[in-house]
Image (tube, rainbow over all chains, first blue to last red; front, side):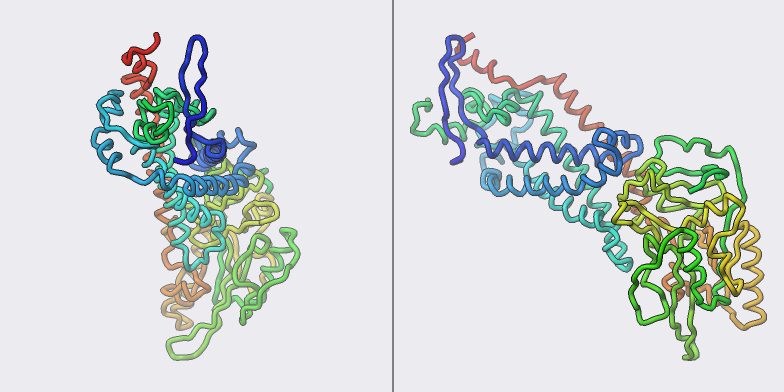
Amino acid sequence: MSTTQVVSSRPTATEPERTIRRYTLSERVHHWIAAFTYLYCLITGLAFWSPYMYWLATLVGGGPTARFWHPWLGLGFTLSVFWMFKIWHGDMRLTDADRRWSKAIRYYIENEDEKLPPIGRFNYGQKLFFWLMFYGIILLLISGFGMWLVESIPWSLGWLRYLAVTVHVVAALATIGGFIIHVYMGTAMVRGGFTSIIRGEVSTTWAKTHHRLWYEEITKGTSAEK
Amino acid sequence: MSQATLAIHRISGHAGPAPGEGVERASQVCKLVDTTTCIGCKACEVACLEWNGYTFTDTVFDNSYQTMPATAWNFWNLIKFNEHEREDGSITLLMRKDQCMHCADPGCLAACPADGAIVQYTNGIVDFQQSNCIGCGYCVSGCPFDIPKFNPATKKMFKCTLCSDRVSEGLEPACIKSCPTGCLHSGTKDDMKELAATRATQLRENFGFEKAGVYDPAGVGGTGVIYVLHDATDPESYGGLPKDPRVPWVVRFWKGPAKWIGNLAMLGGIVGVTLHYLRFGPKQVEAAKHEDGGRP
């Protein structure tokens, strides 16, 4: 929470809307490192996944190039997720407010947000996505090393080779599911969300509507409180 | 490798059927290794290196006659030595020429994601095409015999080609040509099976090897390399020849049903969010502003 503050009020003639800093520059930079490394691993991973998507490897320089960089950018993604864990694991802990919110999640899905209980900086869905990616990358990291250094696994422990493939596929598909929903919500569904992860700021209305407890906490004792 | 006269039967990582598939049938090429007449001279190891242009490199002394613990990316043909204790307590030295088995149903080809990196010719030879190989190592997981090896310098996989270049020109494989005892034969699969069966019968009836038999595992559809063994009930003692090799079921599932379950799930996710958008649309806080009596 210390990373957020009321940064400015921008009175203009037509739109005197206050804004609140939602993400620091450092948070945004790491989000986009994670985004681009994940996207690279997604594109190349799908190319290795199916002959019908092998053409995707062409987009990033061809099969051998894709194969060379996939594990290295995967390591980059891992580091960025671990960094997010370091700064966000407190914020991402499930609270009673989240549990109340999760019981009313259908109102969120059906855009009847006024019927939802108030929540903090991140909502239940965002937290689930965070933990999905966090545990997903741990599985992808371990199984990925198994596939990267497959010849180092002795023949007598051959089942480990097969386990690595299985875990990598299951974990990858799980993160892809989360990724599809995350991108959809961050760009098309929740308006203002995409701007917030680029410029770092949201309007006070946005904060009040989507994250009221967070809004109340960071505006406590400031002029923005209402 | 020369493909001048080699028609392709199967191709790895390919969307749709392999071009030219099924237009031609050729006799199946087969190597027969009679372990009962092998003397472990390693002439085949040297011939393999010479023909394929590899120099001999440093190796590991394994307290046995074996040249190195396992085949390598630049060492495709290895005699495996095993000091085997017979039931009566006496010792015999079992020697088996280890190399790619050229399975009729190749696990490496099933596992390979790169278009055309592994091909199976109509004559049954399974060959790696390094120009298409991406070096992912999936073939390592697919192979029931632990044969494909990675060259870290070029980042490509290598293994025995069954001298596809020589065979396409009507020559026998280099290892076969070099064998001084005649324990190595090559020809069509049918001829080799017949020769192997005759030899196994001879061993059973005239030499007292009651368990002698032919190794041509059905689990991988039969192989392009078959063995005559003194004891066909215990192939494991011949340097770890698997008793019932199969393409791992994980690889089968991964390359079969899992692919379509996964693809449908991913497609379902994309269709799902699209339908959600069409049905419920975006969340806009501007709307709330109006209700608050905010500015228009």
